[in-house]
Length: 232
Image 1 (cartoon, helix red, strand yellow):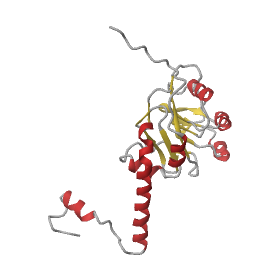
Image 2 (spheres, rainbow, N blue to C red):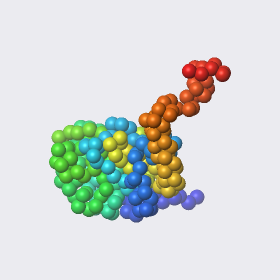
Image 3 (cartoon, rainbow, N blue to C red):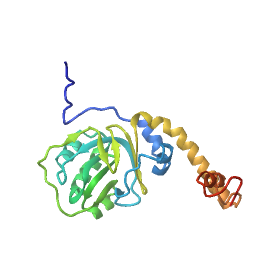
Image 4 (tube, rainbow, N blue to C red):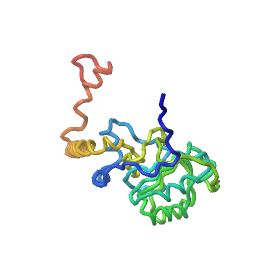
């Protein structure tokens, strides 16, 4: 019985979400994309930008590290292509920073669109000043070790969401949303419709045409809060 060869720890090449899809997705808030993707795909709120002005969109280059060790992030920077988003499964560990100013300067010079770490960063003021999009679960002045192996471009779990290499990753002040590579293009027309619907809803509120959603009474009846035929 033949066995499937094991994948190498470092996968150098993978299919990325197309650049035109990234460019279109970048026009939408992360919240809109999360909504049209079924209200899923948003990372845990502990992973937040170092500054609310930071935003990015791009294909995921995934990294798995052992807590407190950033060897594989250095390897990721060596393989990253312009526009990539480095997404790091740091196991949520906050005992040591996995990236700081020097690595962010390197990432920016390489054209990396942003970094998302389920772990800690440091040199936050310098990173804010340079404006590089860094999203992390926290801060810690401790530096990392650089001697433990990990994996590149395998599926990872970051902020409670599975991220595959090449998936669409979008971040803004609200956080980070991930959409599967193969589904990303189909989400764009839905995002257009969602923005149009929300724009109309806000206009109706401001004009006092509709001060509560039209679906509210039906939803309350379905939940058993109101009886059949009853309204607020």
